[in-house]
Amino acid sequence: MLRETWIVAKLRAEATTLPQAAIAPRRNNESTQKMTASPSFLGLPDRLADGRTPRAVIFGAGHGTTYPGQDSGGHALAASVIRAASQDDTPLMEHWDFDLGGSLFDGGPACCVDAGDVSTTMHDNAGNRARIEARTREVLSLPAVPILLGGDDSVVIPFLAGFAGHGPIWILQIDAHIDWRDEVHGERYGYSSPMRRASEMAHVAGMVQVGLRSVGSARVGEIEAARRYGSRFVTAREIHAHGVEAALQHIPERARVVVTLDCDSLDPSIMPGVAARTPGGLTYTQVIDLIAGLGKRAKIAGFDLVELYSPADIDGLSAILASRLLVNAIGAIIRQTG
Image 1 (tube, one colour):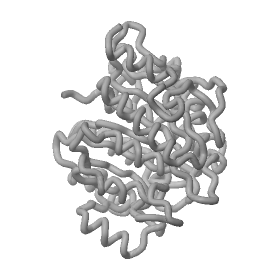
Image 2 (cartoon, one colour; image 1 turned 60 degrees about the vertical axis):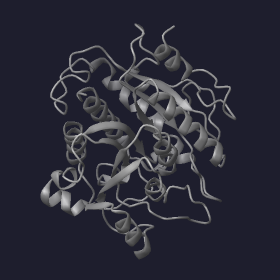
Image 3 (cartoon, helix red, strand yellow; image 1 turned 180 degrees about the vertical axis):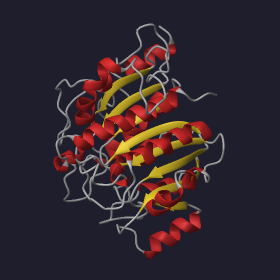
């Protein structure tokens, strides 16, 4: 069997080199994920039948690093509800998509797979990080573009860590908050710290943080630390006033870029299913224009979508929107050259 085919198959099998099964079948996420079948995103297979290497591999991770005394179970449901929301579009993948200017796979055969979920357990913080990072490395070794469905923002840290050896990378963070806390309650790897931890990774060359607004965990010290590092801040107000080029201009042309998309970057009128609703957010069109523009200017090397909190969703609106964002990310990746 070809090495690429073997690795994709391995994404669905038990890994013996990790503390727990790092690669596991699709499942609904609870405090410990249980073995119950759920549909794949858009009905995509877990491997390509003809042995081709996929262009992109989707996987979920329900839990990352949960803060002491907190419960990450609501965020852990996200991958399952996004997959479920995508099912109405499954028979339409070859139809014209006006957001993409063509069909999802641009007239070619399907070249993206859904490899299911990493096995994670609430409060098994170090173990969860190890398994998410390992899965990311395995996808990159194909080579393919990893697409992670969180989970809260803490899953971003091991996802980005998995790119060590595949850099340099830039980060395009689309988020209402800068996520730059060094620690919260003594924990340095929680959802308030992913960009701070990313700034310490040798393979991260720079970052652009887009959609910022209102107030969050960042204090004056965190803002100053991010600016000293060289992070480029682009507020939601700037995007509303000047368009997505206000952010894209800071990304070096042809750079390899990992996109981390927090659902709270979008306005809660269209994305109510988040833990901290904040008015003044980005529109759907602005976010998909950011993704498409990035795919033309640079190279999307990875993509994650996090912080969908389905208990706060209204009539499944957020899950549908998240599904469409993922479709646009896949479409942009498929249309990249080089």
